[in-house]
Length: 394
Image (spheres, one colour):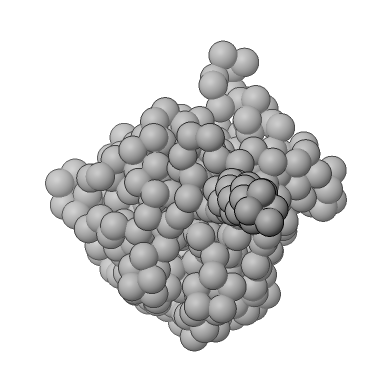
């Protein structure tokens, strides 16, 4: 009996050891060397896939779905499938906030990409900071990333580097008396603030400034006032839909001065909406639109061309710089997950410290504790619309 009891004790000890070993190999999301977890990687995505900002948000939503499908078909990230929790905020700030709460509190994601418009991004930021979950904003306002917020990163070229490029163009072409027209929201106000600062330093004078709604369908009353001031050029600071209306109205009133716009018009929908009035418009933007005009030695060229082809083949319409911001965020996330797993805090640290000279769609990113955008002025080219096509002019 004593021998049987001893054998039972040995068996129980072996079973306990096996249980402990099994628990030690249980999938987890802590990251680090030797991670064997197969738990999914949860990513939240909130874009304006419908509503007034859909010309920006739809290619963003399509891009994230395309990328997740591609990676999952190839086994995910280090063998871990990606679970995408994607929501359409309908171009509404309140919807964006509600969706942000949902991905953080209900879906329990490790990271979020979103904020199609500057207003939506800014409204989502407090939730990301409170929840201590990294947030990649894809809108442009410098207020998103300046001052630096611990958990917030920005993929779009900011108006703090875009406005000086516009001012440089004006100065080089002796266009010193201008009209500045901006959309009446966070994107427009931030752009005007940065433009005014750069313009003062360059000796550019704003003879008239005015605002228009994001839902504008007739800007002629405002433009009649502009015409009376006889500016040498008109700067229009908005995004695709509203800027197209203003641009058409400028030409319909017979105003023939140069039109310089923001990077918010950098997609083919602007040309479609503005029609012939788009011809001659000049604006700064990333190089996706003019990738075929880049030399083969340009490190961005292959990245840009591959993304354009994959997107067009899958969705049947042209890729845009706005979808490109999502491409950049997603691939930076991939590298961070490989390094640190999916614990939000470790993921945040990896994004900040390990993103160096990352060649993306929007430019070459180098992030740091002091810079959560990581792009410089060389991420932009000056582009002119000629015969409804993009032409690199600088």
